[in-house]
Image: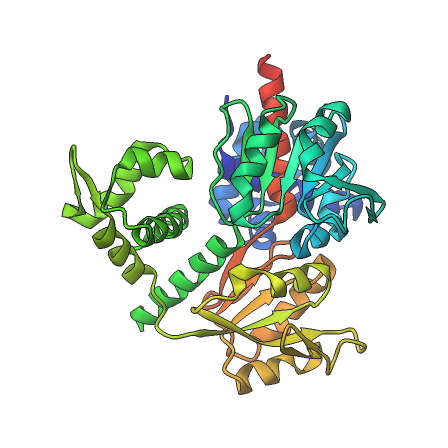
Length: 210
Length: 210
């Protein structure tokens, strides 16, 4: 059973909410309560969580601890993933300082940039190497996931050079461009300009209705 | 006809690609070529673009200029939107310096933070105000869209205070938490930790197959 991408996205959010409720000692939670906290429809919550069988009961709700542990198991990592970050500019530095990339599932273990003034320096405890050495260092240090935070003009050539090493398994792409990879390299893109355009589009549509 | 969110996201990407092809002087493009450039299936491209009727012809492809102008019209803004940015930390600063938020559809016209050492200062040409003054300044300056780049613990209370002004129409949320707003305030979330978790989930699934 392949779980669709939007469902995985919601699972991550259920996990985050349930972890908090579990820590706070809450025993039971309804689909309605989950829906309100996450801005999802209760019917969507029930549909998503129906995969887990008897953890929810009609009129009673979901057992917080059981559901949390179940989703935790689904999302658990086989090991701590080693990450490389390419592009130590404004966005790359912000990502480095950002809590989301500092958790027990991942470890940023190398930085890469083409700016010689950054090479050899340490940012947030991680050393920066020259981008030309990326493929070699990624294989040597067993880095499996690369965060790409370079300008669009550099994105595809960066991808081509690191993918050629055969060591990269996944890319989290922040460049505002679609990158192309071999089928066995997974890509998830966070395209900030697309998200902004989407919001502006729907704002315009709302105005038309009035 | 309400266009679904993933479709709008793809439209933005078609627009970006077609703009480039148009500038480069290309006359015709096939669904296959579009698909390869954007890492979408050609069938998906044909389905999306079938909304536009006779702009594409079987065996000939799409007329680049016509299609570009058509999508440009759909995504065009009624005016330049004024944006406020809340949270001038690592991520907020990176967003300020980031090209995607500096285009002809939007203008970041005020910053807000609760750090008194930042209040009154100018970052990337934009003045920073105290967060307590946000609701007032947002209405005064006719800011309609707010970019939220504060820690999760502060996100909902920030939203509640700015939404109470009645002037905010949309929020681009970068806080790793689901925020709740009245129905007439649109929210688009860019949740970096969710995107990373999704990638790690699929990497794990790929490994299981082997």
